[in-house]
Image (cartoon, rainbow, N blue to C red; front, side, top):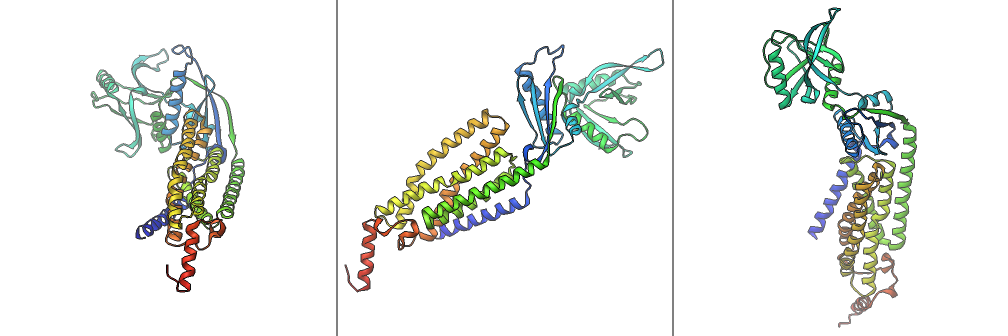
Amino acid sequence: MKNKIIKFWAIVLIAIVSIFIICTKPTKLGLDLAGGSRLVLEAQTTKAIPQITDDVMNTLQFSIENRVNKLGVSETIVQRVGENRLMVEIPGETDLQKAKMYIGETAQLEFKKPGGTDKDGNRIWLDADLTGRDLTKSQLTTDQSGQWVVSLEFNSEGSKKFAELTKSLVGQEMAIFFNGDLQSAPRVNEPIYGGHAQITGGGDSGFSMEEAQEMVNLLNAGALPVPAKIVEENTVGATLGADSIAKSKFAGILGLGLVMVFMIIMYRAPGVIADIALILYSLMLFALFKAIPVTLTLAGIAGFILSIGMAVDANILIFERMKEELRAGRNLFTAINSGFDRAWASILDSNMTTIIACLILYYFGTSVVKGFALTLAMGVIISMFSAIVITKNFMHLIFGTGELKYPALFGLKTSEIGKAYEATETKRENARFGILD
């Protein structure tokens, strides 16, 4: 009994933690619910890459995903559309110009050396074979005067190039270009080893913090392997998302309510316990969505709502088995244990087939299908815990030590109960009249 009490309070603690997470953590919503921007990019051929292959598209997709992640744009979806196009969805960002900036700008960092002047007296800068591709990372810092600068760290090959370049330019200027614009042209006093450099802003005021940070973000995002042209762009308004959320809430509450009513009608007292377990299941699953976090789309919410109905499948199998045991004459404690033990194989088989289907959908499906598969699979896993741990513990606490006094509480008639119940009733009547066996 002590072990059952410990399990009960552990379940209560899980419920409290789940409610805390739900109340404190934000819900990550997909583009269809939160609104945002949708861009379609088309890969362009170049002299170096005359044909767009699957490998090229995979590299482009990876590069854009890496770019938006490093820019701090969360929950962005990048997926293939056709042979040479990518669709990029950015939830929460309804400014198309800003959305295009996230994925459309290519950070081109170049170091150049002086090559004399032209006929008009303008300085000529020559390529030095040192670019942003030789960088490991960049970060925002300040110099000794407190001005914002961009600190650069080169990879091993870039460090060698930078050392050789500065060695050849001692006493001369070295130009740093960013996206074709001259940012600074510091004088090299001595060779610079160690693979570190700084970019300072042009003019007396230097960089603003925003300018320097944007440069850092773009440099860290890297360049795209092939040019990508935006061929389609549109926004999804938040109004549509709010309407979808409202309808989803109504569907979820209605579905949960109907399932709970059905369980009470069919299984009476055990149905009430199953309903309590179902509420706890919903709290735990939604808290898990927020804690991971899972990006909820309409398809994901559909998977969540579907899992509510599937969550009671295990309870139905258990309760039907339990009623069979009671009809066969087993006492209540034995019937409860047998119901859980004998139903477990069927529960595991049915849920595993669903999980396997979800894995296939997640691996081969599009982002929308993946959202559905993920939420459904998580729901199935949590439902097994809910049925086996929560429902079983509550059943033992309430009915596990008592006798079957009221068969109607289990949706049964007295006439359906087997000989063990009749024998128990006979003993009780004999005891009332002082008759010994």
